[in-house]
Length: 352
Image (cartoon, rainbow, N blue to C red):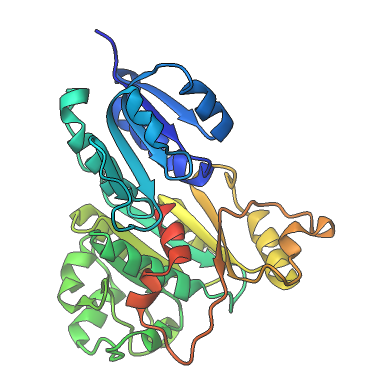
């Protein structure tokens, strides 16, 4: 019996890799998977008759001519929906920068008759560590914006701010810290089920989050390792699709433990000399930065300004996966609005 033939065609390699990986992980040798990033090659291939079970194609490569081929299902990936973009038979429009799990499940679900395969089991919770080598690069804005974006895309997200002195509450409507004394007692000597012990104080505001502590960790006598225990315990509960840990730029043994437990690590930087130099120093202390575990985001990007990320004298030791353009605001931007920004959505898409 022939294996279903699946083609993914998109010039955006950052988009293709996660989707390709998802198909490989879930269906491995049960399908024939082809990936095309060159538009001219794609056009040359379809200049002759093709039989394809599933074609996943970006709108830049899509052409109505494709309907002349024997293609069972076409999934047209759009950066934003356009009224009446296509009304052709077997052409399904999908918003490109939504969660990879949702995109994958929609493709497989609508192609069940072609694939004759069941939708794969839901993956376990992911721990995403968001950090930076230098303060002031907008790490918390990125982390909370990604949390809002994933939540808007039907993911249950828990945000944990792992800072020794917390100030993230300024971004929230409810800025009140945890007041329950029993919670602090449990945090002083956390059990392996610490998430279950304190989950009654978890709040929701665009996403679920652990509220701020009433004082700095050192003032409360709570060890920094408590964040690792909370994250691991929350992951074990399987209540969340994604757990985002927003960690400050301290690098010590306890911080390294958070790097170790994370499924993905997002390092936020800027294009200036200081931020790039600091990120280089951080990278020199990390193992496996060339693996897909590490994702580098350039925040506050301005294309017309000096960019140390491409300056030859900087000898940059990492590669930027996504850029978030600088945006102006007249005060606090709500997390809901951050989550709707295209650049934030692209960054969030890289981790799911």
